[in-house]
Amino acid sequence: MFMRAREGELIKTKDNIIFDVKGLVHPPNKVIAFPRYIPSPEGTRGHGKNLYGKVYNLAERFQYLQQNAPQLIVPDPVFGATLCEVPVETIVEHFDPVERLAKLRTSGKLEDLERKAVTLAETLKEAAGIPWSSIGVSGSIMVGLFTLQSDIDPLVYGAANCRKAYSALQELLKDEASQFKPYTKEELQALFDFRSKDTHMSFEDFAKVEMRKAFQGMYSGIDYFVRFVKDWGEVDEQYGDVYYEDAGYAKVTATVADDSEALFTPCSYQIANAKVVEGPKLEDITEIASFRGRFCEQATIGEKIVVQGKVEHVTDKRQGKEHYRIIIGNKPADYMVLSKV
Image (cartoon, rainbow, N blue to C red; front, side, top):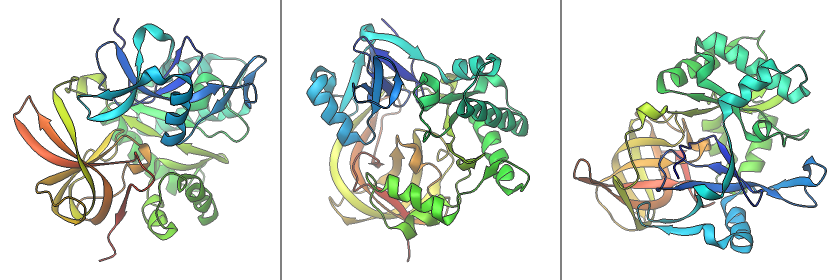
């Protein structure tokens, strides 16, 4: 069985576990995804007998899998990591952000949060001049498991559409008449308190980069976080084209040489002048990558950075090339901050 699944989408299995899909490259007949909403009698999401709890960080997700679905934990030979891989034949529902938003737009009965998600999308679509087919809503709204504390998770597909949408968000945040507002220092502190549970860095380092990101903020009093994902025609990597091998853990200083892929999830940065401060003294570390939206737009071209994460040896079989990269976002100790030097 084949299923085309990508970042921002959710899937539900026969066990009623709802997973969020990671990335755009998956093994044959499987989807790389991690549990997000789990059946729980004490859950605060859902109705009647179908109550769910939410698992946040990666450690909690693996702990849940080990206890409830250990067969999904797989050492992947291509990605060189232990991942959660969901067999396609166990998937009973596939949630699509674009389809969900389309249904909300034509619904005559919406909850307040759903209504705000629709008006946010309408405003962004109009300001950016992008088609409805390129914009959707993900997260708890997509699966009807939101609470009074939930945020809005819009999603934009296609590189050109993403860049238009980001430029539009930058302008909307400057417009005092707009419902889009940048985070106040207090709101940024609340975001830091939440994220620092599984990404350790100082508030000073955090605030310096987060304050300038336009894809997050407040919309009509609700937190929003827009995810930008490439379209299928813009992704040429197939499973097995590129192999990733664990090469240790390191802290590195470098300069951002190319930030053209920094907006998307997964995101990447090309770096120059990489110097290993701690860890294996490897040459040719030329890339930083992450599957987590929080590391998008983390630094711009020419900026000096300090980054800490897992080092991978990357072998591209299509081009016969090899290099090292640092991948961040898998451990609380992983970070990428602007250099103070």
